[in-house]
Amino acid sequence: MDISSAGLQHLFNMHTKEWDHHLCDILDIPAEKLPPLFESSTVIGTVTPEAARETDLAPGIAVVAGGV
View (cartoon, rainbow, N blue to C red):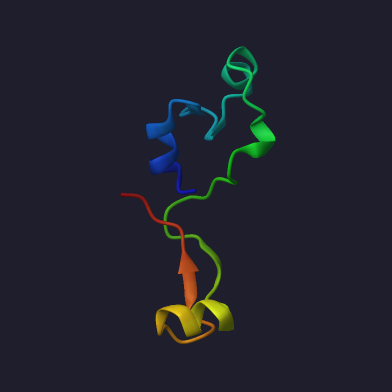
């Protein structure tokens, strides 16, 4: 998840740029269930052949983290 989107979830610590484990503990939310965090424009993978068939995108295109 892009960190700009993570800030909307209210479990994100803007100072450390990580999930707030203290809040997760208080709310009994396992932090390991939250998605990994990435800076905007970080390449996080590529389009798989299966995803390419389903979306008509070319396989191997970069998948980039981005906020809303």
